[in-house]
Image (cartoon, rainbow, N blue to C red; front, side, top):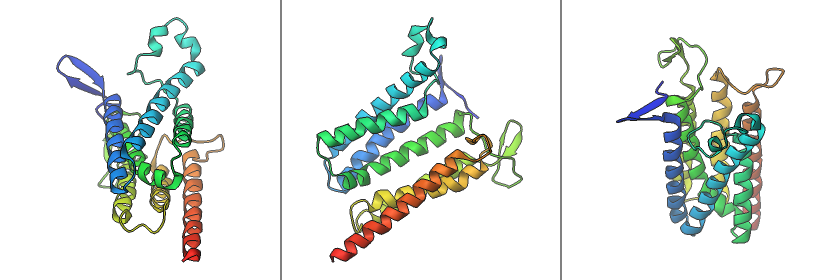
Length: 245
């Protein structure tokens, strides 16, 4: 819809600008969440910042390795940050590894840490969906519904808006329960289950969904697994807490 943002003589990719703003908003959300949960805000901010930086570098380097012939004669292009060449899975793996070792080094308690981190993750995912809506390649299936939006001269499901609503629902549940949580990990597991369940539904309306060779929606499979695992762990931890009372 708005792939380029014009600021005076500058023309910037809208998605790239949204990613930068989303990263700042995500770090701010983690810092605030840590304060609400009475955790070390500085340490969690550093954990998130390190993971974000590691993920950014990892996503770029993974992409460069995969498409090395395109960069062999353009080494400067490797470090140009506004290129759209990033490998999501590579970046995610590197970010998780960096965050894991940082947490182990500083002996952070896993469940309370995840409770404080999940609002930032949700804000980041919300920003990605907004970037996709404003200037990204994503688009929904055809629809005649009154809330459809016009893309490529036809009306389509605003699938990115659906994703944003799923993130807001999960964030709302976190905020509603953060003062009355029953056990560590409840906020993380419930938020993960709600967002995964929302994406499980919304991905059905995405025209350019990730598909396997036999037509299975890969993201839906991942979201279903995450939702079921989160609900299972939520039940197990609740039973453990009840048995100790």
